[in-house]
Each structure stands twice: as structure tokens, then as C-alpha cells.
Length: 284
Image (tube, rainbow, N blue to C red; front, side):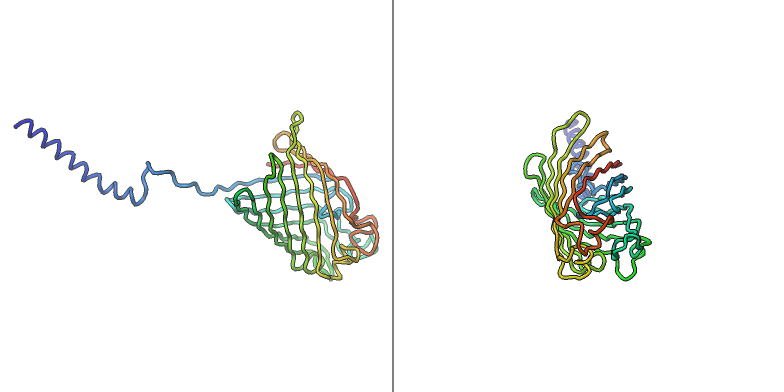
């Protein structure tokens, strides 16, 4: 009899524990328990900033600083697939653009600020870049024609072999700089990480670009030397050191000559001929 009472008591206790645990178990099934696989972390945001000094600010083959130096800097934010940022550079647009007189102030701008945002999804081994860029020139004197403009871009890149990357990006502007009209730009870029040299981490990179405009007289005068398109290219090596510093040594050139009617390719200002450029940058 005593054994039966002990057995019955234990059974009653077990039943009570099961009944008490049932609601918690059901609730855990609805909400997930600590023994479930951990929920995926929400995309974390990262931020970075950079400041640099270049011997010549060259954009798509054109000097933006009359072959002079420029201080540059930017700020970037990334949250999962999304990114946004702003980048700025000193300029020297004192005359030359829109005028044959290099002392003219027809276009007087000393600062460029570029605002951009987009997404970078990954499909297989391909990283995509879908974004928009707004180029602005604060406090610029630009009578008659507009300096500010917008570009949309679609890019794709991927590793073609160990530490070697190839990418293609297409840019589209419905109304290019100086009211240049519909303009397409295609850039093909290649980079290859090279063996370290002591404390230096070198990377070779090269780019070939082609720009085509859909028949704007303003574009032909300002950029194309009477043509609706032109080619540009660069090649160089970037040396990373001390984790946050880099020194880029680069050669630039175009198929345009420093003559003809193009305001950007005439005289001593806004030349588009061959040049070597050095850029020192600090990123944190």
C-alpha cells in the first residue's frame, strides 16, 4: 500500500508538471524558444569617411582644376544592401568654360558636391550596383547654362580569377552638364591585387570609358570637340599602407586633342590630354 501511495504521488506530481508546462510550450511554439535557431540579425549599418589630396582632379579624362591640386573628402553609410554618401572636391572653374578667354568668369565654380545612393545586391558571383548620382556645384556662377546634373547607373562586377575583378557600369543622364542633353557613359574596369611589398599592399587597376551624346550642340562644343562622343582611359597602382592610408599613382588620357572648339579642351584650362596624377587618401 505504501509503495502504491508513493507511485501515485509521483504520477500526480508528473502530471501537474506537464499541465503547468503545456501553456509555456504552446506559447514557445508560437513565439519561438531559446532552443530554436537564432533569428537572422538585422542589417547593421557601417559608416566611413575619407579625406585626400590629389595633384589634379581628373573626371572622365578632363581636368577639373586647371591641372592644379585639390583637397577632396567624403562620407559613406551602408545598411545591408543599401548605401548612400556625399563626396566633395575643390575645383578651378575660373573661366575657360563657355568662353575662349581663359580670364573669363563665364563659369566660376570652386566646389563640387556629389550626392549618391543605391543598392548592391548579389546574385551568384555577380555584385550589382544600382544607383543615382546628383552632381552639384554650390555657389557657382553659371549664367545661361546649368552645371548641376543627375545620372542613373547600373553596374555589375565579379571576380574572374584569384584577386582579379572585372566590372562594367553604364551611366545615363537625361540632361548632362551644361545642358548637354541625353548622354550615355559606359566604363569597363579591371583590378588585380598584387603581392605585398614590405608594408605596402599594391593593387593594379585600369579603366576604359566611352561617352556618347545624342546630338546636343552644347555637348559638342563643351566636351566633344565637334563630336558626339569620345573615349577616355586610365591605369595605375594604388598602394595601401598603415591600414587606413593609400597612395594612388595613375596615368590618364583621352582621344581628344587640346585644340578645336571644345571649351574643356582648349588653352591652359580644363585640358583633356595625357597626364600623371598622384592621390594620397586617408580613410577612417
